[in-house]
Image (cartoon, rainbow, N blue to C red; front, top):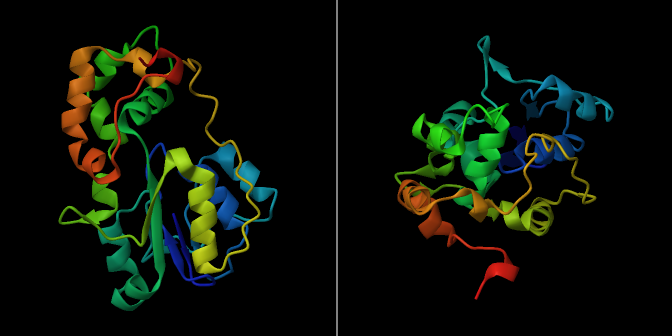
Amino acid sequence: MIISHKYKFIFLKTVKTAGTSIEISLSRYCGENDIITPISPVDEKIRAKFGKYPQNYKVDGKKISKHASARKIKDLVGEEIWNTYYKFCFDRNPWDKLISSYYYFVKNPKKVSFDKFLKEGGYNRAHNFHKYTTNNEPVVNYLGKYENLESDLKFICEQIGLPWDGWLPKAKGNFRKNKKHYSTHYNDQQKENVQKYFKKEIDLLGYKFQKPQTERE
């Protein structure tokens, strides 16, 4: 998560949407008074190459969560900053997002099946809707799509006057060994369960369960 007073933006970091890559890239432009939350030690090494590190992320001795919700961030910064800064985040096709979450959290897929992962709380590990909404309504200025990551981020940076160079590192990109299309992982019941559980973001962003182009009729 980043709160930039220099460029007057708030980046809400959602799960499994390339949030760490975005944060590393945008951290390069942050000023000394901006808030940058910590990421994993491995990814911090990437950021350190640019002389950027976590900063100003403690308030009254308590750490600000890297995945803090809009509600918590608003309470932190106050009405004036919240209402005047440009707020943005990203979300992702939930069927694809869940597969990414599965391979991230389950280190040995041979021992824990995708079905078991879902039944033991996997759906909650990919839920973002509550982070960028209040009373079921988005409270960000721009809600980008992971599928349009580069073009959406370019547009966002143009809005805030940040001279982004288009660079994004491949953070957390080595967990998903099975690169098959997400649709190959689902049975009919699992597919329907995702449709129900993520209905709000599916309706908001228009996501659909789709097969690879070569398999469509």
